[in-house]
Image (cartoon, rainbow, N blue to C red; front, side):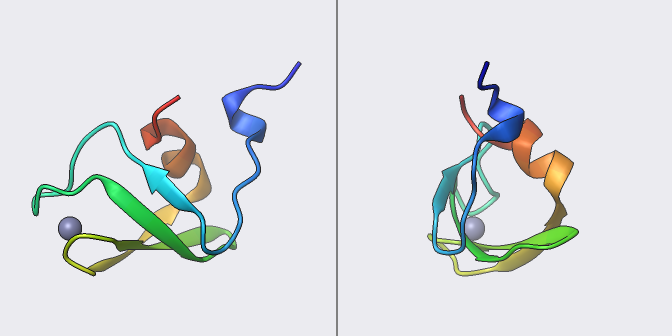
Length: 61
Ligand SMILES: [Zn+2]
């Protein structure tokens, strides 16, 4: 059984979050993957660090 938890995320992928960023965008580009993920907002180009668990909680199914 494949669950969202096991969705394979790779560098360069675009992720859509359920809740939009304050800038209005809700699409993030994956810059780095590790214990934390580094994401860049594709609208305002702000970069954030976010835990792997939070990434999976925030993305749209
Ligand atoms: Zn933004």
